[in-house]
Image 1 (cartoon, rainbow, N blue to C red):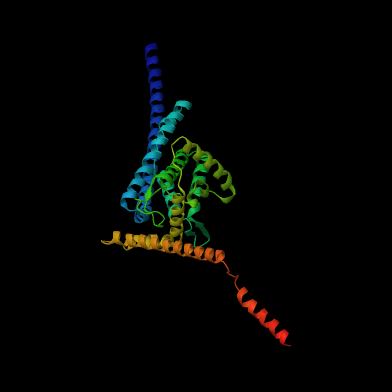
Image 2 (cartoon, rainbow, N blue to C red; image 1 turned 120 degrees about the horizontal axis):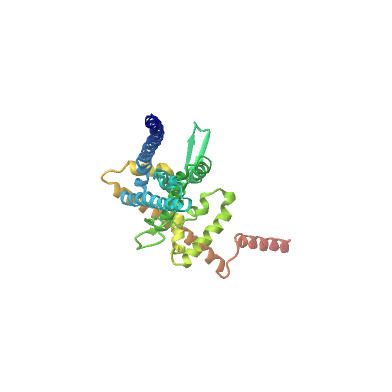
Amino acid sequence: MRAITDLLLLSGDFRKLSVTQADEWAVVREEEEDGDGCAGVSLLIAAAIVLYGGKYLERAWGSKEFGKFLLVVALIPNVISAIVYVIWFAITRKDDNALTIIQGSVALQAAFLVAFKQLVPEHTVTILKGIVKIRVKHFPAIFLLGNTISGVVIGTDTALVLSWLGFLTSWTYLRFYKRQPDLSGASTGAPGLRGDASETFAFAYFWPDLVQPPIAVISNNIHNALTALGICTPFSAEAVESSNDQAMARGEGGLPSLLNQGGRRGGGGKREEAERRRALALKALDQRLQAATANRQQSVINHSPGTSAPGEGSVQPDVEATRREGDQV
């Protein structure tokens, strides 16, 4: 009898244990299904970003440069974030940190916003039938602020980490490494500019005007330290001038010229691109020649002997004539 009772009790405990394990398994399966749903949404977002945003970047840079950019901003942030979570798990010993799903679409979003900030910073995006108007140059800061607040308050730490890594990777690559043709005519015989040394693409210009001075001090000190270590190469005055001219040309063209540039492409797309670049280079060269000629003429006028100031030669004869009339009277 005692053996039968023990067997019944054991069966009841086993049933309880089975129910508990079943509940835990159901929770695990539910979390996995939620994760699969989130992954599906992220995949759709990433596809839309690459399809629509990439279309414009490919028109501006070409397929080869766009492919390099896409590889850099998709690979580096995800590898670094994986290392970050491994280190985080080693410190906290929390299984959630080791089993975190890393989805790279957030890094792509941040990277594309940085690229558009470089190409068309002054373009205005209208939302809600004109109620809200935001310039493209403000989108990276807004995106980072939203993901930072979400990561701290809601707990979406993966979006926080990936957004910052995507932003920093994209800016570093476009600022220091990406090759682009020199459209200003400042340098001759060179294969193109490396990076974007324009003042408007500096790190401090991604943030509101109020905090730009302290951020500029910090970023400049970091850059000087990296330059002293040989990790970064300082920009030359020629590179800064050429990059500023290109930034000005992009600002004058705006987004419509970027869209029309690729909309007319067909078999003669490369020829049209070369003509556009040549026209920009000739325009910048003509402006520089006019400025140099004006400065040279002004210098000759100022240093020529016997040259009188404007209006001085016409005033003197009038004075002499007045004196002669007075003598005659």
